[in-house]
Length: 533
Image (cartoon, rainbow, N blue to C red):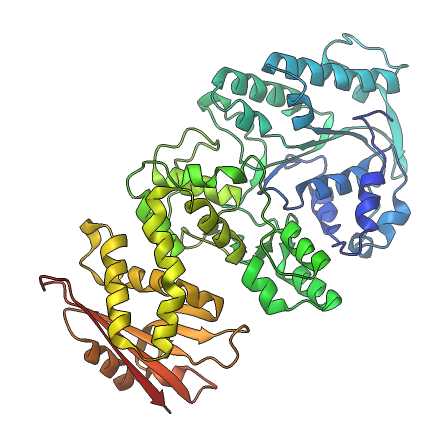
């Protein structure tokens, strides 16, 4: 047993000792199915605090020859499957955190030299009886050890391969963000160390960003990637069922948990939660913003303030609660070579600031916790002043609406429309919809906001349905028009029987909003009417 070779299981035991432990051991069933196959290379990218390191500790505890973990795993879900212990504690595991080596070297040459010497130190010490062709060459040394060491596995003698576990594998691309030569040298090392090597039975890497691609240096193509934009991996992060179970165990309100922390979705429609936020809310018995301010999260205000055409408007639409299209294909999988607004939005998806819908190729702000981060970051940027003011004033607008003060509601929306809409897109119904959504953003504290809700003989533009924080609230149906009249909007709500779709409520507010694009003063009007079924 060395520092990096064949670690013990102490780190995973600490997780088992925690009262909020979530059993992710079925990940091992998945890796066992890929063990020693062509699909044995896995790279998982998730935002910080999504449980990546915990899973690596678990994999190490399971595969490492340096410990006995039978009792540990015998009580977990994995043990309920057939042949669960087939690979238990039988292999040479190398487990490294790349950030550790990056922090102790000023250049890529120093990092790689320290990494190689550190691993060789452990290997030569553990396998002193193995004849080595070149004890300064890491890949040749590992091949020699693999060729000359055997053990009995399932009743027959077999060579002992290596399991390679790498945490923070992508830190090089965050720290050496402008040094292309260093990045290529690093990719060459990973490729030469792992690709086509028979001594590798499993390689599992984790990081924040997907694998960086540089023409010929996209040579880590042996890895199957699981990222925030293309993933069916529900093992990294908490699933909805896991969060519901924790809420039931610790007496936490499930609806509030979803309101604060739900919103990330994988391409198999699995909902994903940030484990740190969920565990923090349980430990403190309080729902709050537990967003980590690490080196990636501190950069939000910088990224959303880039001077790319359409970015400002896109962020404003996201802030209003809309989902917008995003093209993720041009993103270079780094944090510095952004050329379009879509590159920025894709980076924010990988950092956890945005969610992504695989089927519709749309992005959105996933939950209240993340929205709070946008508001905090945007308040320090002067260019967002009017947008933030509109959000902050939305509480007053909601109060005016509930009180039926239609004239003042129209005046407030008119001001927000003038100040926040791009003049190129001012004169259309979508711009009015965006204006209304951002105007009523505070409503999300007390209402579920539903757009284009199927209702009666059509679709209601916007429905505000009281949520768990507003049990005595009144539903609000908003219909938008331009170049018509607010009265015609109210008439449409009634004629098409939209109120019938709002079950369990006998009393509603109907709100019609119209914008006259041809008038000199761009006049807005509003009608508010109480409706009793």
